[in-house]
Length: 265
Image 1: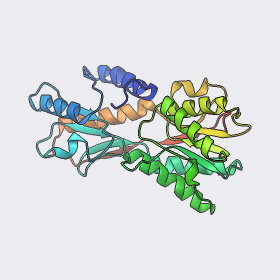
Image 2 (image 1 turned 60 degrees about the vertical axis):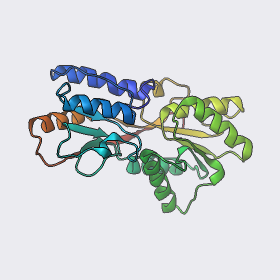
Image 3 (image 1 turned 30 degrees about the vertical axis):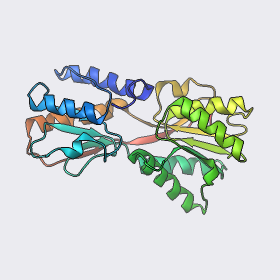
Image 4 (image 1 turned 90 degrees about the vertical axis):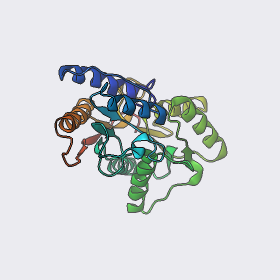
């Protein structure tokens, strides 16, 4: 898992521990990096690990791209980053981001800022969520203001806070912010507080992931939510299937999402 200090990663890992143990598996958890992935793959080939669940961020850096899939250990990839022929579980980022954008538009917001927009070397997730935003805006004849984009691949609260402060100093504020993670939304909350803007009276804020703290912040955060247990169960089911039948055709599980509409919008 990348970003294992983050709340989202912790919640996912907790479900892997619980549900993995129920299925008779012990777990080894590593912070995601190409080097760490290669080490896990090496240990799996030495029969020290029965199967792998990887969550790479960029396909061009991921160890899975260097594998001969015919000789690869049992493997499932979480998220949008995966080569052809690999079992995969993910949430539809394009559809979810489009739905959140439509929600903001339905509430009367027209100048929508994005926190976590793609950089020059973007992650797959940032690209897909931006694609969803742009498709929804196009439906209503709206466009993004480049001055309202906070581009970063480091999706933590401090980076989001600093980016929003910089954005607000350089242009008139948008009337809504769509943050590509809840953690970044909390950083945006701090930035808006520091410059004297109220949520949602002056500017609405929406997130993505529905981490446990999202409903406890004031105001409670509107966000994209999905069932963590269902997500992890799908990954484990795919992995056990692959362990039992290494020659099975690759499969993809798309976990349903919905909008959790709360006070921030």
